[in-house]
Length: 321
Image (cartoon, rainbow, N blue to C red; front, side):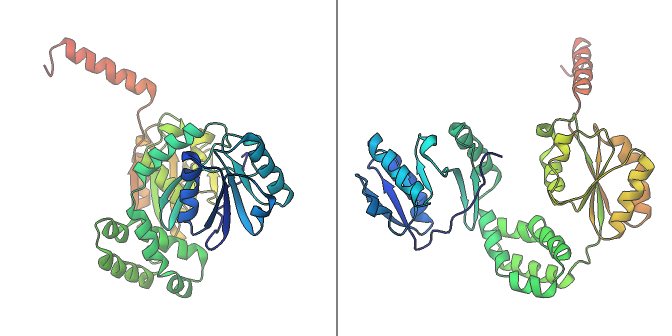
């Protein structure tokens, strides 16, 4: 990681924007939206930095930009000079605003265009109403901490809220109904119990894992897997979730049962399409009274080739024409 992403609290603070042009105005807009007081200048004077929390340079003479950067560095004020990475001590990311949720995408200055393209993808995947969901849940934070002081149990309830019926009601514009569901979730506490999700890794490339599998990996309390799961797929798991690597299928099943019986959300991560592991282990999970669900993976390259060959063969026989 080349840079450390940090969100600055700029409400009521002063930010200097040096330069007069479209780029300078575009950079100033999100800073003003964050509540900062913007000071615009076309010529640099060191006194302009007095009381500043941040300095931005764009659309100004090179000598002015260099002087701004040097003075800001000397006073330990974060400075960003557009298209001059050597003069910067901070970088401006591409921003997805879902107030109060803010998502920032940076490339360490290596590929700003790529950051913008990634922003477009994330904006499509994260609708604006996610911000409303976050704002609604925030009104229950005090109740959640009081009712569920244990962090792990509180996280489990929050996961049910963020991924369950309460979220669906918010997305449907029914916030009063969502609030009632959140009340019920808090009252139920951790009674939801454990579960085992059999998640298939597919061909083995992290970017070919299904979106549902990625979401579940990010929510799991523990991930149980065999040694044949690629590290890139394992990296999709939540950072603090233990990864239990066991060579024998019977040991994987025993570990998944043990963790689920302790009330944890378990991912039994399987290679390929996962169908064989699901058929072999899911019946025992259900016999233990533990909910089980299957998330199939994408077909491997060989499976796709076989499917294509079968389709072409049917076509030659006139089937489906």
